[in-house]
Image 1 (tube, rainbow over the protein chains, first blue to last red):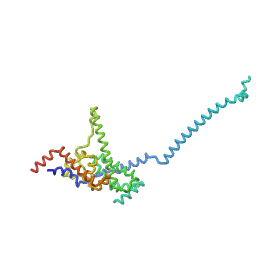
Image 2 (image 1 turned 90 degrees about the horizontal axis):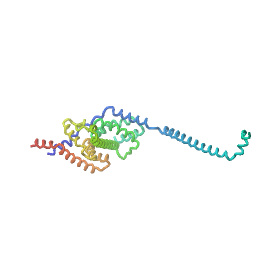
Image 3 (image 1 turned 90 degrees about the vertical axis):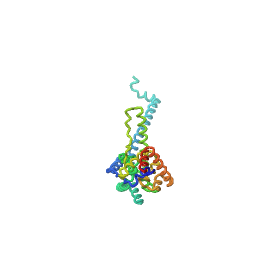
Image 4 (image 1 turned 60 degrees about the horizontal axis):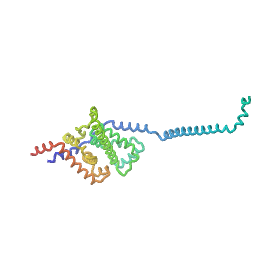
Length: 92
Length: 201
């Protein structure tokens, strides 16, 4: 009575393997090549990091110089006499 | 083959494409046969085959020889297949949910219920079709044990190594898988039991 179920359960016994589709390996190779092209090499990573740090350092340098310049303009007020000595048109 | 396999893996880790081709030629029929038993669809199995071998190529460096190359490749194949089925089931559930709200979205693609394994013998074709129609009712572990032992013809110890469990556990999973499949068969194909009773009388 149970035979029909056992027959179904063992229906794959002795079956052949399914044939692998032709051209599958070529597609795998293409995928691996595409992956390699996407990945950045360590040298390229270094170049990217170097250019980012150059931009950051350049900006920092600019900000620091700008602050120094604004403080040096303020310090000119400490020498009014010196300025008036060279004020040619003020004596007229 | 184990020693040669280990050598091939080392060469693949160094980027040797010829070694990769040799490994592919040896394992792709086993991998593809396993994948098609899970997916029941040739296109999906081919896509997963590509995925498995790209993973093999990418992770060859991290291969540790505490398991055989065969075990390792089968493990990758089983994991990819189960991931694929999980994704497919969740999208199917979402499709059913969406179709409740949107009449036009009721066009959901279900897998063919008439899947015939390409390697099955002519006289077993109908029985194999019935088998594959109920195999998805098994749990992931039971299904894996059934596919690997009954379709891939691996030994229980090999399957235990792939699943990282004991041979006893595999034996028990196989028994439960067979029992559950019989219950499903009785439920979905009661006429088969009746016809076999009639013919035996």
